[in-house]
Image (cartoon, rainbow, N blue to C red; front, side):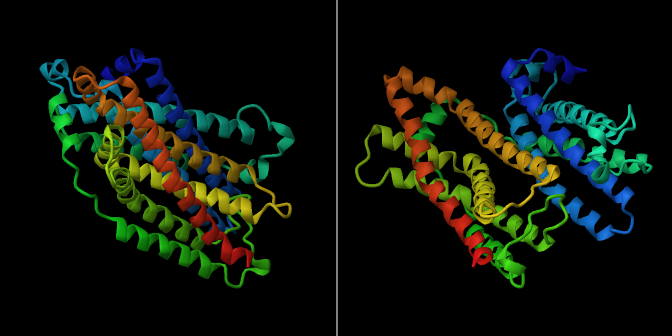
Length: 387
């Protein structure tokens, strides 16, 4: 009940983030139900059904990542003296965050179930002249237990991940302590060598899988079952590698800004990047991996007609939308964490224009570093398939 009351009294932007999370959960639930419907209508194609289920793991993981970012930026789960006086310590706040996340994602799962049943014709006849009947398994009985199990994956995983992320959240320092952190450089995050190795391994897996493919091109999963599972494994390895390398690259961007004889703006921008490397670097690396996949697909399938099925379009939109929203939400979290630092600097006489210039400089240097990296990864992924 407390989670519902806090949801009703939230800021409109907080409600928008929760509605976006509910929409992502609805999309993932619909994809999972489509997989179940296909398996029910085509019992002889068990391997194809398993491959469809594997492809659904990617948008599910993107949704869980977005749910964690939404939970971390929720003002109702932020430690405050009033909540501590009411007995809501870190453990109970993490449970509150898990409950709020579960409410949003469960709402999306209910919407997915209603839409799925409507398209199957289980509620009021087949819509769209039965165009969706084949990949939804219309006319075959739907196992209720399996449907509820699949629909519970997104709420349970999102709630558990959000609760654990907030339980491990460090205590926010005071404004003076944050200002002192800006004067001393943060420690370099680890994982950059391992991230580069994993990304290279993922590209190698994709290149090896392309051997023997007719005409050098992959048929993309128009209905989630025409691309080998090894392609998914290679892309996942690349995405994990870029996520691990992202904090290290962001830290190096901060070091790059401070080379030579930096002024106040460059010094401030560089120190903030170094301090926020882990918070911003991981979602930035994942966005880099997703965009590289989009660029590679565009390079492969622009010459001839390649049909993209509705499930492929939905899955791609979910992954791209959730990863982008996670990056923006993480940037908002970093801004909230630096609010007291900005106030302290303004009280010390720092011009507001200097803070805005430092923010723009951070965004520019990240774009200069990660945009070419995205293009290189995309070209390396598409090169074995177009050669």
